[in-house]
Amino acid sequence: MKELCRKCIAVGLSLLLVLLPEISTQAQAQLSTAPQVSQLPLHDYLQKSYLDLFTLAPKLTFNASDVEKERQALKSGENSCKSRFKDHAKLYEKQIDAARADLKRGGAQLADQPRHELHCRIQNLELLHSEADVLSSQAIPNAYDNLNAKLDLLVRWPEQYGRIQAAIDDGSYHNRRWGDVKDIGFREIAAGQRDDIKRGKDAVTELKAAGLLPPELENKAIQQYVKSVADRVAQHSDLKVPLHITVLQSKEINAFALPGGYLYVERGLLEEADDEAQLAGVIAHEIAHDTARHSAKLMKRASIASLFYQAAQVAAMVLTGGVAGIGLYYALQYGFYGLGMVLSLKLLGVSRDYELEADQLGIQYAWNSGYDTSGFTRFFDKMATKVGYVNGVSWFRTHPPFYQRMVDAQREIMFMPKKEGGTVQTPEFLEMKKNLAPVTAEAEKEEADKPSLLLTKEEGCAPPKKLEYKPGQPIEQLCSAEPRSVEGTIK
Image (tube, rainbow, N blue to C red; front, side, top):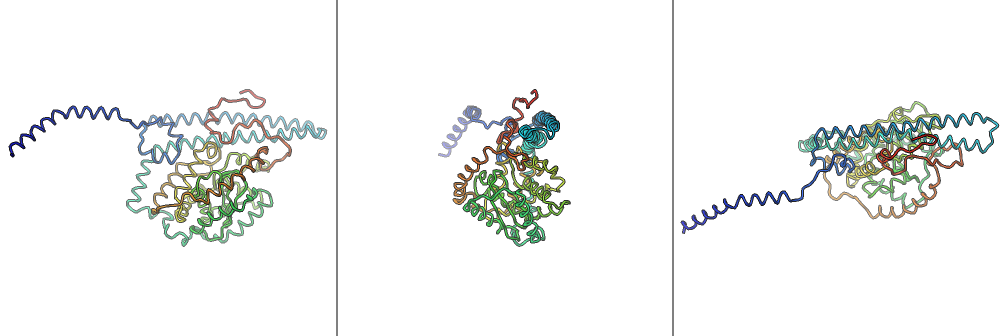
């Protein structure tokens, strides 16, 4: 019997040896015909969201020459586009000078209607000049910085991820600044929060008196909802002062904090947020500015104690405390030019470190409040990749580069103790959206025929018809479009 079994095994092994080459060939054939995961051209990945790239980057490989070619292509595209709009700015400047010369020649004898028309022409040309200037000095560099940041993420994130994981494995991440997250509410981020209350209250009073704050949104249900979200975050933060939160009737996608717990959320932010975790993440970021006393530190550095300087401070915080549309930047530039004042964020002492600090603390506060910690970064990511928003404002010039900011935020999220079931969406948020829809529709109807200016010097002027940037238009699309003629000039 044993002998028979041995013979059977021998025969089976012989057959297997004969069949192995054929099986191997068939397996190789099946592998070769199986669907393969193809890698896209490098530039195509730059159109993807940051969150997608965090997942994809470790799985992709690009050779150094492809990366360098892409960098050079981005540099060339940026330089060409900036040059075009710098030329436009110069042409508008000449036209402004010509219109002012006409006004001077007319003198006191100039009739009211021709004078009004010249005033309107100068006013609109100033806005067109401001647009071209902002496009060349801010929006275009921002858009290309954004693309370069994504390129950096593709190249550098895998190594960075390894370092983060190593810090988690060896426990060294506990030693980071503000790593004591289990003591939130019992720790002191910056001493003297209560000293800021009067400063913030006075600033609000002055700004309202000067008409430099948009009106409050007249819907109690929306105001109460936003207050409830903010209160939830504040109660789980390091804020030591009462929180005063107001929703402003403004289409800008923004929120900003004044000293002493005065926090403002603009209507546009509510329109763009997709869920409560995103809204809470932005609010947590702004509360963090107050717990670290960032706005108070900015105001302390002021060398000119005047209302207009306070307005410049607010403008700085509007541009550094959230995401603003390019229209607001035009309006600010136009308004402060009208006051004979150049808004210089560097002069005001705005620190990029403040934003990194607010990102870290904001993520901690959202986590401690029971929200999904990706809320802020998902909203940030949406604004970074949604055409025409972050691409079109002075984000990179007043904030840390996107790569650093996104990586630091992702690192903090990875460092936080794991919690299951963080809040993402709520019925209350969806109800707020329903209440907001008619408010937005009515506001858009009223705003339709109004130029986007904060300080209009001449009333009754039709808005410029030759603005080159359309809200929501990707800057890359603007740069690749066929150059068109500027009024009174050749292409």
